[in-house]
Length: 147
Image 1 (cartoon, rainbow, N blue to C red):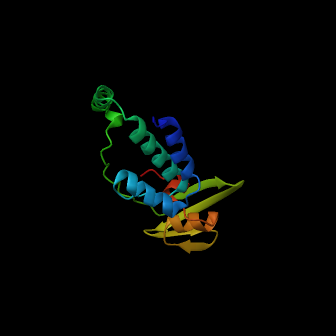
Image 2: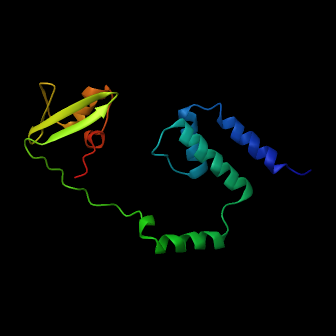
Image 3: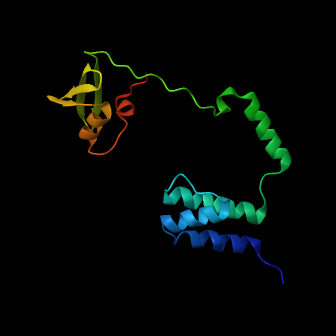
């Protein structure tokens, strides 16, 4: 008797659709041997489906892996070396302006760890961004602060 590998892989992948995030995390651990740092159902489902297919049909050939490794070595943008964190400095009187949902929001820097927005003071840009959006945002990202 011959096993239909295509049908087997399709059934295994279809079974992922019925799993919640916790079960997908357990399946990820089973397939990869370590816990995922990302606990998003769609992400885990896609990663598990990829690994199931990889185990069923095989991964990249050694030649393909060597080719990709050579591309990475020659491309400075492909090197995923951690960057040193930039020092975040603010100057009193600086203003950050962002338009969000049709309204312009303006924040004034009063000093280190002190920002003014709509007559209220905040200890961080993140706190201001949360006040504006009602959800957690990186203040620097929300206002487009690069340094």
